[in-house]
Amino acid sequence: MTTDPNHVDKVSGQTTTGHEWDGIRELNTPLPRWWLWLFYLCIAFAFVYWIFYPAWPLASSFTPGILGHTNRAAVLADVAAGQAARAQAAAGLEKASITEIAGDPKLLELALAQGKAAFGDNCTPCHGSGGQGQKGYPNLTAGRWLWGGTLDQIQTTITHGIRAPGDPDTHTSAMPAFGKDGILKPEEIRQVANYVRTIDGLEPEQGVDVAAGKKIFADNCVACHGEDGKGNLDMGSANLTTKVWLYGNDINDLVYTITNARNSTMPAWGKRLDPETIKSLAVYVHSLGGGN
Image (cartoon, rainbow, N blue to C red; front, side):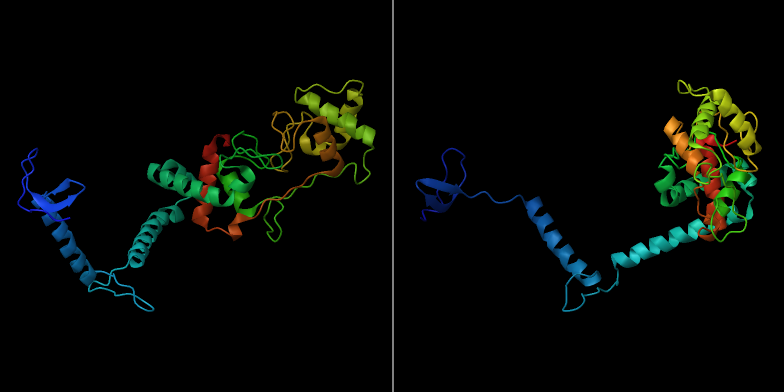
């Protein structure tokens, strides 16, 4: 319903639009001028944007705009710049030895960052995100190293792996399957397993002849693990006195290991990763807390 547009509302003192519904009149309240000008400015900006930047979709493409800008091109440019910066920084890692990297704060910072990223991409599935390992995969933070924990030793292990097929320089060692190969009887295996627990300060099973296990250990295990059970880095034989066990120190775990052996493998990462990444990985692994 239309009424007098010059009507003035008695309460607000403002004119109405002339529209009335059920006795209610509509106040004529215009938008603030600043808001209108801002709105017009946005419209003008949209037209300018359409001209300079990609805006309108076409049948199989889009209007490129005068500047020819695309987000894809901008991202590719950023990626290229990042790669160039990384290559420049990595040049220092390429020329420096691993010892020099560890002694140079800037190179060390770069190596730790690059090593952490490489560790997450390649090593985490087996060793865990923090290097804490899991059953069958070494804990890199515990200070227990089958092949040594110095920077050079870690670099060698990463490069050539352990029992890695196709790498003549890979670490090689093989524990006999004393039960599977018929070297020891099941009772003897249980005896020596209990003796091994005692040299690590663990309680043996009741009723088991630990003295007999000690003799079996002397006859079959000392050549690799030593008389004191502390192992041999040159042979990759485990230190049995550290309370850190690759496959567990439960009596059944030990019996299984002695019976069947384990002899797991680690890839030769030198065939998959560049030398700079190998150095960075070695520095990062050494920094986890288990380096010697």
